[in-house]
Amino acid sequence: MEITRQRPATQPGPAARFTGSVWLDEIAAPPPPSRLRMFSVHFAPGARTFWHTHPHGQVLYVTEGAGLVQREGGPVEPIRAGDTVWIAPGERHWHGAAPDAFMTHLATVEAAADGTTTEWAEPVGPDAYPSA
Image (cartoon, rainbow, N blue to C red):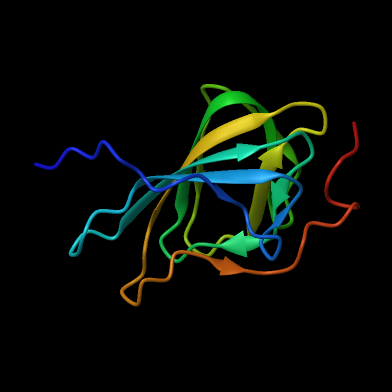
C-alpha cells in the first residue's frame, strides 16, 4: 500500500486539447503494471475538451457544477454533480462545462500498452457546442 500526500501542481489544460479555461489535477498514476490514470478536471463556464477517443474507454464522475457531453452523432447531453458517464473504447466524444456554469469531474482512463490514454482531434465547433 502507498499513500500519496503530495501531488503534482495543478496544470492548465493545453490549448491544443481544450477550448477555454481548464485546469488539471493528477489524482492517480500508479507505477506499472497498473495503467490507471485519474485526473480532477476543472472547467470554467463554456470551457470544453476537443473531440477525442480513449483506447480503453473513460469514466467521468461529475463532482461539482453542470456540464455537457456528446458522442459523435448523438445529442448534447447535460450532466450534473453526481452523474457518472461511461464512454466506450474508441468512442469519439467531447465534454466540458455548461455555457453558464463551472463544472469539475474526475476522469479515469486505462492507458494502452504503449502508454497512450487519449487520441486528440479537432476543437468542438460552435455548431456542436450550444450557447447560453
